[in-house]
Image 1 (cartoon, rainbow, N blue to C red):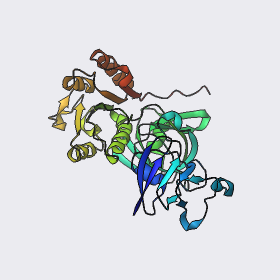
Image 2: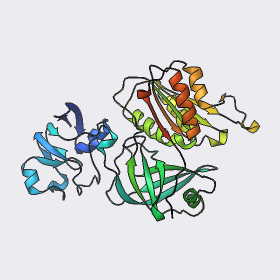
Image 3: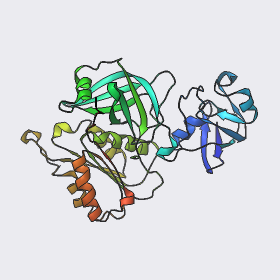
Image 4: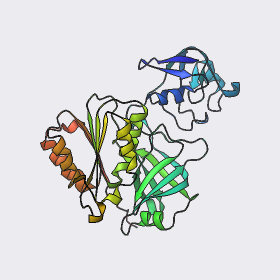
Length: 341
């Protein structure tokens, strides 16, 4: 059995399965409602039930919902289960400004070696705490001496039990040196986020070109997994530029996406393939591969992430080839500058 839910202030509608929370159902169908703890203890997901009736697990009012609030129709949608069709009033998250950055501790749940110079961190936030973010945003690790290190979230928002971070080792990098030489599972870290305006614009009808350099793959991965999960059917072509074949970490993942989704295409590009790579694919600068395939960019949304030289060269060339600057979204992975000691 399922119930219909209508958001009065936006006129969006979605269905909720028996026993499913209003929040989980909305997220599953691509509507982003505000949330934080997802356990009924913070009140972030509070909204109003205008029509219909909701119930809570074990028929117990969540801790963050007072009796007075419940009496005037307020509800916590991370816990509320429909008992009928509903009409509700709740704020929808439509832009980065709709999400307040938060400071949270986290534990390193797992470490994976993805390449000779790339490690993946899986981070768990405490208890029922979950980080709400838009696909493509990043977090800052908070270090001693007011130092920060920014890394993009590689997991999609709907899969937020663990946060996925891709860390490339930087020569003489203090934080990345720690990650590669000392960091162990179960270690504690602190971060603040989410931040950034590099996120997937879901309301545009235009076809999409995506371009990543190195670990710029991380935010693109978040965007693409979000798009596939919610059934986006806009054409997407993803170009990934790296130096040699060994730098294409998780290479089987975009290949799998291309096989599974007719509207998605993937082109890896090597700038300096090793003779031992036996590479038969595209070579050179990744932005030049994009322009060879799409010499007129006037009809496209373009997303790109990676090192600043790649971003700068691509931005100049893409605008010359007709790209509307209002449809260019990018994230330059520059090195952090520490404050004076």
